[in-house]
Length: 212
Image (cartoon, rainbow, N blue to C red; front, top):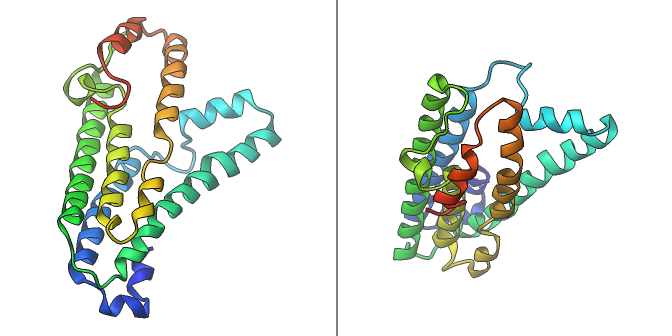
């Protein structure tokens, strides 16, 4: 969207500092997301374990409907709607205010948190034995540090464009709390299926669900 926005005639008179802030912060977020996917992708035969479970539990027709609508189209739509405010900010001639700097800083900090959580989880999985639980570093603060970071990224986007598009706050946090809650209910059964210990219950009482 930002690349397309750069080509808009209105963008030629826009504030360049705001454009650089948005482009830099969101490029960092996108690079981290793409890198984390790429280094764990084994090829076209790779499929997310959650999709595998859906495929086993649902009929082929129902799975394809949920796959198209719920797993791919709806998340893409949410991100698109969240970024529409960014287009208005991208072409705005209004000078950058302090809130835009705060928003860009929040996006950067939140993305770094996600990167740290990614690396810690990857290192843990490489050496973990059955029954081990990751409860150190950022994972000692939150059971879902990546989701907390994602929420902060979208709040950062909202702060960056809010002086120009106040309604952006409405679209800043795309329903991640219910997602985390459903994962917390689902993961214990997954761990039991892999013969992992019941220490997950202890972890849920000592760490926050999302926010540290």
